Image (cartoon, rainbow over all chains, first blue to last red; front, top):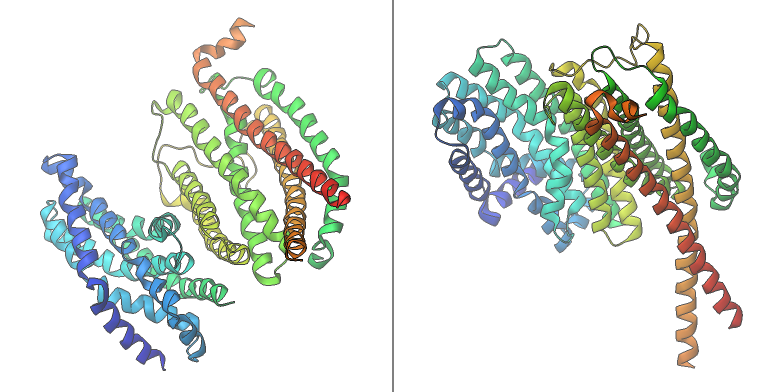
Length: 221
Length: 247
Length: 53
């Protein structure tokens, strides 16, 4: 199986299996809907907290299905197939995480835009926030996939994944939300924030698959 | 070098010879450092007596980071060369590092309240220490959740190495965010700016904490070696008893 | 002495910090020592039982 074929297969599986993008999107939406009920309806406060809440809700949404990324493969023996397929576990992990980003997490930037509007951000700021999440989402997914590979098949894997992934996702959270905040405040740090978010996604693109592959290989021995 | 010390018995002998000196040095350093920090060092002209919190807060922060660096390095050694002693070191370092991170956070709050007027300020270094604390918790939770001993060690080492990549972010986050916290003033490229009357007790306290951590880790590693032997013996005994019962 | 204990009005912050340090460090040391003792005891017991067998 070539890497591309693997990618296509994983996109199909991620799209169809376990509710596809519906679960994280609904989770994200629920978080966005509940936060104002906790914070209060004051428009200024909501706008100030908006970029942060929206990015944080997206981060939580990437953790929510992370158990699925490798959990089933470990359980049903697909993992052995990947290891023997000649693609290599690292490339397989990369393809799985990217397929997951494309098939399951695609609503997150869109929701960030809508959420930005609902929280009272200017359309341009909401767009910047959305762009920040677009750049950060693959990185968030890759870190979640790494945590998922470590915790696959364990009891209470979901809780473990959240605890493992959250600290590693901090830079992405900071810069994706930072871009939105900078756009809102009119500070000229939008571009640096976006570039840093992209940089950490690129770093995750290289490192997370290696880590995930190492974690999966440890399981096969 | 690694393989020389990777022999558990050789390590155990070396550690046994070192430990009395290490514990002794710990006691000596605290005997000098504590009175110096609490009595003889001057109060700060701005921070008054609260500056004394620094003598436990800063060493705790250093050790929380150093222990994570040690955790990452021993995890790397374990991951590449599979030396069990490196895994023992990682296992011994993690809870100690978590305790120091916790200590740093609480003493930071106790220092922050009179100085900033708030128990907690979301500044770069306190926040990164909180993240470091979470890294420790995640590491220990992952190890606790895996039953297979080999897999536990492997997964733990991978996570610790990933976390180590996060440590530079913690170190340099001072530059990323810019808030109320005073910039790191002890280690700078142009030399320390903190006054000598405070730098001396701070250095001695930091050294005391470091030697203490060394003694603690060596002691725990020795205990773990015995525990391993115990488990082996108990397994052997059980299988022997079963065999005898079958006869 | 009283003046020293008073810490210029900051006693409520300085002393808890040192007390907590004592608790944390003492706890770590105590845990390590007790664990070592318990392990040594278990080993001695096992060796005795094995010696009888």
